Length: 119
Image (cartoon, rainbow, N blue to C red; front, side, top):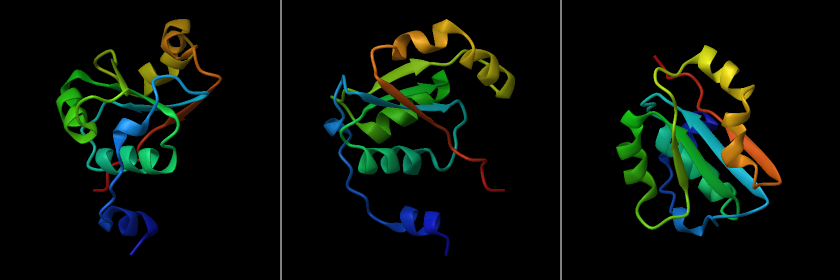
């Protein structure tokens, strides 16, 4: 069993309500896919960095799923990605000031992504 499989098998009780609206560090998840490990990536961030702000850039089709994971009444920001969104859009987006504008209130930004889906 891999370390990630052990992590997924735990009953993590992370409260997404602990994340402040403004903090020196903002974690940013960029994910347009309905990835099977989406919940685990969010819970991992929340458990390890509960004091950091969290922004999720996602496709419109993932908004409902993510909302169910994080629950109501949180300070987590959810922003839409342009669709379709893939590798080329990611590379170009990182070079655009508009991509960084919603994140310029933070001292540090930690961008994280989910690895490829296991086939």
